[in-house]
Each structure stands twice: as structure tokens, then as C-alpha cells.
Image 1 (cartoon, rainbow, N blue to C red):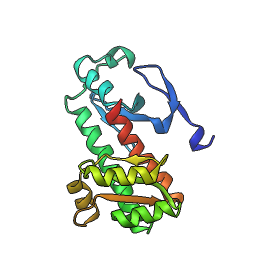
Image 2: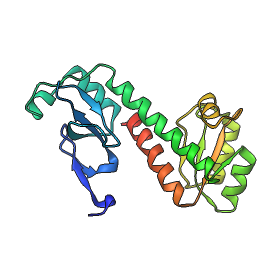
Image 3: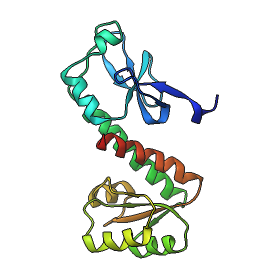
Length: 190
């Protein structure tokens, strides 16, 4: 079975989705629940819908005891821990695209690559100026625009000053970056 075709069921909602659209967790022997997105930890693995809201509800009312048939411990900071991991994975993916030469930085260069039809999608700082956002949005038309990070976060991650607009070139690398950003965006918005 190919990776794209692998589906799993959310233990909380019962929704069946591709694995990439769910979050994997493990149950340690002491009952602690931990994120295990890379499938490297020992323990009983299970999937939960990619939603901050669902994880926040899980910290208040824990139905996992009944679902997993064992005593479970869900720490209060689990949603924040998952958010930090997904945020970092998104930034790491963007940085990898930069290192591979598949990332264009700066408003004028981004506008140029969009005009040439070579951009897969755009990343803009969520605190970018309205006039710049309008120009990029008008050029990007139906292209995805991710506004997940502020200027300071993007600048620090890419080791550059004043990083506001980025475009990922339409290469195989763009799929990996898109997946990481989409997972983070979905987590925040659902």
C-alpha cells in the first residue's frame, strides 16, 4: 500500500482520513499521551484529528480512558506542545526549501516568480502591511497564500532581516513544504 493511500481513524471523532491529515500520538506504559509524528517512540500508537480545539477539549474531558481501555494522562500543555512541534516543522520545511534553492525571498522577487508562473504557493508574514498583501494577493489569484508566521519568526528561522514575502518554486520540494504548512494551518483553524 502506498503512503498516500494509508488511512487511519481518529479515536475521538471516528472520522477516517489519510494519515497525513491526522496527528499520531502514543500511549506510554505510565499512561502518558505524547505526540509521535515521526513514529519513533515506543508505545501504543493512535491517531487524533488535526485540531487544536479537539486537543484543548481533550485536556478538559479525557474520554481516552474509556476509548483505549486504560488509565491515560493528558497533560494540560498538550495542545501547546503540538502547536510548537507543527510550527517548527513548518519553519524547518521552509528553511529546507531555502537551502535547496527552491525558495524566493523578497516582495519584488516573489511578484516576479508569480508572474512567470513558477511559484507553487506564497508565504507572507501575518503582520505584513496591507498594501503589500493586496499586491501579492492580486498577483497570486487562486494560488495558496500561507500567513502563519510573523516577520520576526520568519526572519529568525531563515537567518535574514525583515523577511515578509516568500514563494516556494513549483518543484517536488514544494509538496513537502505545503504539507508541513497545511498541517500547521489546519491545526490552528479547526
